[in-house]
Image (cartoon, rainbow, N blue to C red; front, side, top):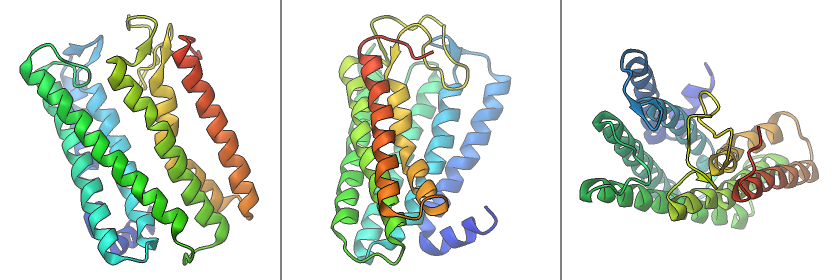
Length: 253
């Protein structure tokens, strides 16, 4: 981390600072989690912002680290601003709804909450389209200033990320995380995944963080392109299995 952050600052100042903003908000919400005991859907109102701010910090710093390898400085600038703003406003909506004491997602209980739900979906689509186009660039750009196996780690991480973002779209389409039943408080601590029903958030979580898992292993563990591709296929199949189990209303725990 001591070496990572100074290098990240050189590579992408915008996403460096945006990541720090979210990291500070993570600790702020963690403090609210300790002192405020209001509940939303059976869990502390600030539990979701805590998860989202931490996850978003990781995502912002991850994107800031590797889009540096794109040849076009203009594209880097455009991608950075689209990623930064879409994620910033998404977490802002989640924060506001938690402050109001109401669910942030799938909440259509009144006109204002319906509007906020549409805003969340719109931001998610902007972010997904941006990352999808970024993925195409990484596959089309032939020359990378990094090793071949690391290049394929970034490509496969991005591809898994985009594919399993579909779990998020399914959640919005169904207006729920759980399949086959209503969340009743039987859940895994911290992650809030259901213990009694199929939960789409598991596949979504694995898909989102394939962007860290696959590139890191390709850099530190794998030495050949084929190793990266084979692991990425296994990761894809495992995540797909969790998605199918969720759709069949089968809890994995």
